[in-house]
Length: 448
Image 1 (tube, rainbow, N blue to C red):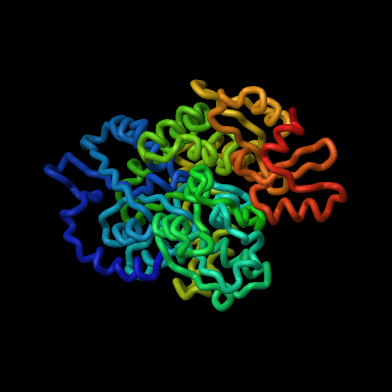
Image 2: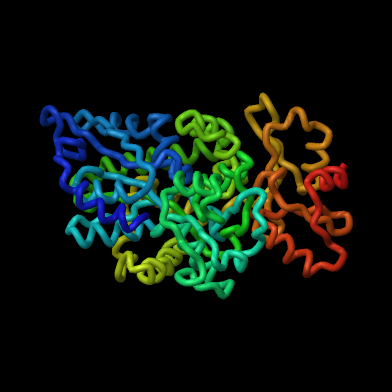
């Protein structure tokens, strides 16, 4: 989230209330419009946005209220969380979804303007931080974070991707404020800058790194899961809206849970639906949202995620984007607990992410095939190359899923092991005598 975007929110606050329905009465006393802000291309929010909208579950839940009102849903699509926050604090958006760092800014901005918001549920998360990645151009000579000294790096200040960049550089002994030239850009602008060669690297959140890699426009320099710090996306609601219309918020959260169950039960179909709505390749959506994707979807507000959110505050404070944020008062899972029921919520709270696995999505198929090892997947791909739509393998160190043909492969005896980034692969080679980095073609040959 940009400083400029935050500053521009003042202008947004001046927009007339008629511009958006909000939860204000529209037309007559029995018609109520609920406004939902979402980010269609931030695909780890789809259970509260893109996928939920396409399935119509929220509207169905509202129709089932039978409280004498007719409800309409105004879905508003944004590129980032900043305008959603601006509209929420202006009383024009009732429910919004965004990443963890923007959620903190949402909390701070709401308190500052006397329009407090609450984190009411989670959409997609990764307990190691794999939703954020630093990428470089395909032909770049950069192989490690230390190579970024003196280079231009694009990111979105105030986003989780910027948090990953800052933390990763600090761990590598690099001052993110002095040793690199950081450009504060929207994801699409940064992606174009990387392709044009005007920046040396790009640190971004889902789905930009996977999209650029899939398109052959980037390769991974740093896998965010190396930080081993949770990152997530969540749902925020205006406090006054939640108090005024708790049944409506609970209806939304029930619908979100239904969309989550749909995604988990039909991951390929869900990926196709999101792809149709966003123009993203379904193969990229599946990389993040698939059965063994980088993201896990669950509405429960897990303690590990709340703890991570508290750790994120210091990063935003250091960037002078916010002061202290009272995370405990911002988090309010009462509504989702009631919406899902105590026993179901407890079950979801205790659920753990599915184990990483290698998968092949065959052409013309509505489901994928899992393999017990990356080598077994390679053997299959070698024999069915013309029939493979996409092949996915988990990083041997972090578990982050990546495209098999974009991964960095290491041969270690009879094993062939995939890694998201060259540096991670080299670290494995350095620790295992006889291991060596090999090409994808060589990995296929060794497996077959």
